[in-house]
Image 1: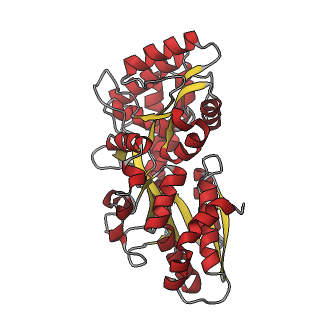
Image 2: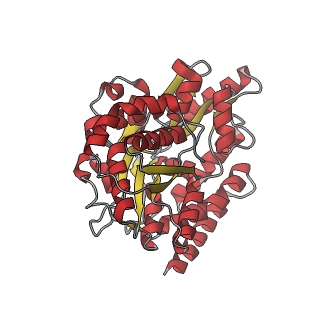
Amino acid sequence: MTKKLFPLFSVLLVAVMLLAACGPKEAGPVTINLWTKEGEADGGLQYVQALADAYTAAHPNVTFVVTNKEVETLREDFQTASLANAAPELLWTVSDHLGPFTTADLIQPVDKLVDLGKYVGSATDAVKTPDGKTWGVPIANGNHLMLLFNKSLMPVAPANTDELLKMGADFVAANPGKYALAFNETEAFWFVPWLGGFKGKVFAADGVTPTLNTPEMIETFKFLAELKAANIMPAESNYDVMDAAFKEGTAAMIINGDWSLGGYKEALGENLGVAPIPKVVATDTYPAPYTSGVFFMVPKGLEGEKLDAVVDFMKFATNKENQVEMVKKLTRLPALTAALSDNVITEDPILAGSAAQMSYGTPMPTNVEMRCVWDAIKPELLPTYAGTTSPETAAANAQKAAETCIAGLE
């Protein structure tokens, strides 16, 4: 979908004169199809479109067609389109697409396209393979889950899992029809932070052997089933349910990612609070959400005028002015090192809370075997939370499914 968003567009035009002076020579008409995982709910899609419009204002020969696709749909559609020689010219996506895309030889390294030394090292490391090649230009740093709370409903966030259960029970008793906590119960991305809190990992030390049938995995399933049985959460909760409940004030707390902060700031204003996911009392360990970021990825085979335009746009989109503007609009940590010292970050308590949570995170695996792990855990979530599958059975099922999937990759 393509939208014209003039208020943000006008803000981004501040950099247009400089862009016009420094950009590539004008060539014939160039159309860049940009697929992005950013959606409308948190303003992400609007921001991407505004960047594209600002670039076109400086380079009228370059036109962008911005299309939003859900993360998994983007992965699947890009793989299909690439096989049909109909891939878009640029992706704005997440680091866990690196494994599938490099394995299928669908994208090109960016080491020689931009100066990667300008970006935060942890961001570029997230899309670097053992051969030293870097496969994405960082846009935002983090992409991690955290605890978000509505201060008008829950003035202080629970510090640990015991407090979470106690404060949750007290809240629902005093507020019939409302929930203390909601998160996306349908995706394993929301499961793995808790696994880290129970000191578990999805892979052995070799980084490819799944370790899903372990005591740590079983304890994680047990805790989340207990949390569900405490009746402090909605009967069913996917991403849309969680998002709506928080914005409408029917959920006091949710677990969501840094990509959502801009939309929640707009909805809740000063009532938005950010904190680490509560520490697991049983292990005295904070949950460890996966950290990565958001990246530009360039399809293999892109060359000539289109590649020139894509490279110049990536530089424009990640310059300091636009990185700071992204922080203001989307409340995400920037990937450009020079932007980290700006006051918009250092003096913002929400960003400080996001950074605190990121400090407990762990880098997301980008190897292709991770896809098998995601697909193996997901079917076990809802039955285990509902109590129809035992944690032991769920862990065993996930391990078997992951091993079968990985064997099929060989």
